Length: 399
Image (cartoon, rainbow, N blue to C red; front, side):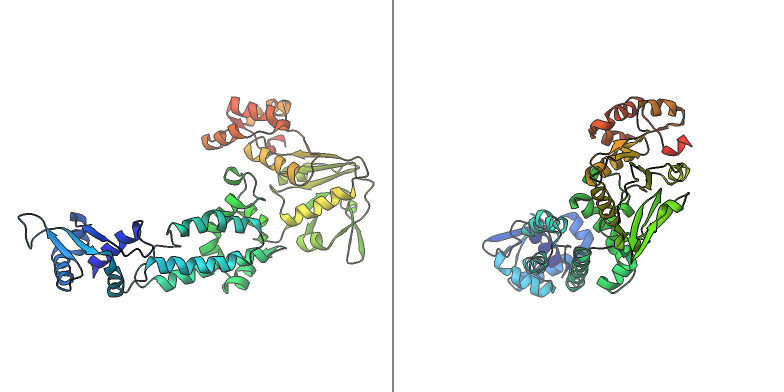
């Protein structure tokens, strides 16, 4: 009966949803309900329920058998209403979902996933906010979708090294495309809010692919582009990248398995945000130039921090050159906070801004608002210039 669905919907939106069956309730009939069900059908259904002594009809004065003002019923009849409508009570659905969530919560290790459950999922369930508003015939399908989502979180919790997106999807979700089609958007949204490795949460300048990299999900093999002399050992072979005057690439397997050797020749490390500028930067004796491609992945961070640790006993200057915009500031701060604490900006100052101001482009209003809230002492002069002029400059303008 459609009238019962309307009554149940109202009950589940109320504070009594959690199996409260004492007292009485009423459902006021409005014109929209007649349009949903059909006036004659709704009146017939109400009469049938009244004949079964499950509710009492209150007719609009002067319109007996024509127009219903409201129906009244004891809350103890909700059990019958659920049975007749073949719907699972909301309190049962919530209890099932909470039980499943807690089973996963106790096995999860990563703090961002645990925080998402603790701070968002469980409080919503306590208020009766199900994974979905479960409707007749949809309970099992919704529960299955929820299980799929938590199996995805389980897979992300297990990852400690990069895995291709479709391999991840096949391994943990039994389908190579389901992660990208159904879950990726939600996972990225959660990571923006709770993952510590995602810069500045909701104000992040990270692209979706950057965020997936932070979670160890690769769309393609990670490649660290470097230019300069770096000595590493891979599976017993000593490699000196200095023999490549125009730079070389270390793929994810090389980064993962490389042992960093002594590198007394390194006196400067320069990270560059954009590929064209990295390519154009000439090799310099004692300088290791690294293409940051935006935000370094966890695997790359680990490798570069190990490199920095191996250089602690020698004087090394750490520099970063990036776009003169919100993203450039965020990337600089990310590298400084997470990889090279001694990092200083390079070609990200007032003189550089003034020199290339004619190549500037208007900053978007939303980005300007974010920039106004951003504080980075080493780049504050640049931040103030961008705010004053309303212009941003991409690094490629230098070429």
